[in-house]
Length: 137
Length: 111
Image 1: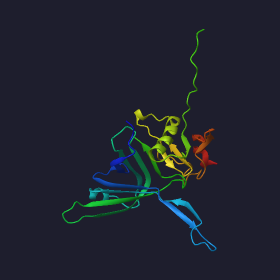
Image 2: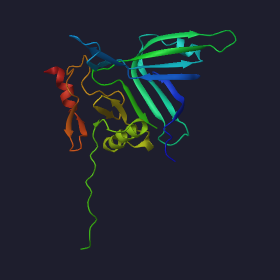
Image 3: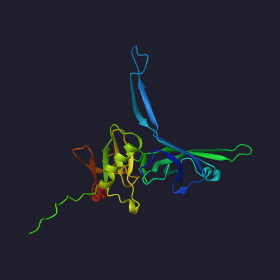
């Protein structure tokens, strides 16, 4: 059976080889930075280019202590696997972001489970190679 | 003498691959098309746990076995900004990358 083109749930989420469990959400973004140009009598942009990127990722977890232990500025690799909806072979997508911890925040309402979110900012060693990569599993 | 089996050229394993961004494909079909090209060229053996990591470079995908790899020598390296691979372009637009000789890297700062 072929992969479903649908992903459900995240597994193997970790930063700098430290696992993060109780994961309820992960976001991955290539972080496009659109630069627009207009001049003369233009009312709307006439040129729009993706001049630079700031790839980012974030993870939200119920394991508040694990998230709050991450120190902003710490460098490492954030990885997360988005599972194929039917668990088909080669249907999982694995993301990796070479990054630093950007920020952490946490909270919890009365009579609800607390949760915390860590955000990561991609860093490229040569300034040219995208620090965000993917593979299949 | 009996007939001999037709010889097939052995596939040379390279260190990096640039795959042109597939046109007309989206989502899973797009990423599969990229990795289907790159994995054999990189000698990826899934049974050993190998993976091919693809990075979107807008016009092409840079794919290697190690997700830490970069196209150029990193900031602070004696060869900062210079290509880490010698590239050979195939007729289909796929570029095959072979690492610059390790001796050259090691001696780069001595010159």
